[in-house]
Amino acid sequence: MIGNHDFLTGADAEKGQVPAFEELENPEGELHLRFYVPSGAEFALNAIGIREVLSQSPDMITAIPNVSPLLLGTINIRGRVIWVADLGKFLGDEEPLNTDRPDIPVIAVEDQDTMLGLAVDNIVGMVWLDVDELQRPTNVRDTMEPFLKGEWLIDKENGKYLRLLNQVALLRSARWAA
Image (cartoon, rainbow, N blue to C red; front, side, top):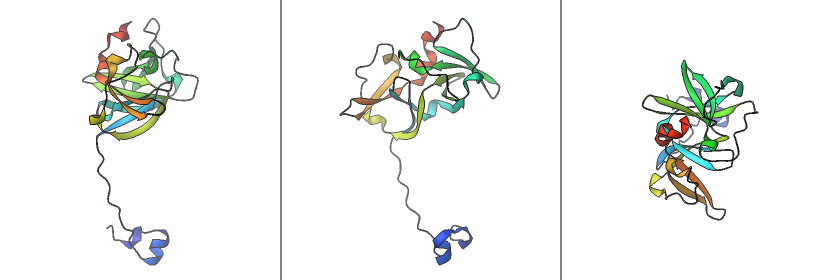
């Protein structure tokens, strides 16, 4: 079927040539989702613990009175109501998430039967990262440290780090009840 000339387009079809297929490289490490919080800090989550990634309209997040200021409200994902939290604020950022925009990126993480939506500023995408190169976190706030597995130095000149979050620690935190 690959050699079927009916599938060829453009110059290759005119010549009747089958394009050569490049050999795909094997990715090293584990698949992670990279994203930013409002302060500009970059984080990653292991893809295994992510249920899904949504682009949620702010008016679809239902605010709930008398709850932790870390929580933006709730959303409905296929009949399941889940809390949505401002991840940056949870990790100790002073700058709150800008909710005055058309869509807010939300990362739904899950462990056992517990699911939580983490609202972030911007999602970079999926990347393969080598967890063997993780370093101990440096220069992090006390409010953030319990939720980090480690960090990668991504720009030595500017001192930029990509920090790996522990989604189970995030989900199980007593800080949500505060």
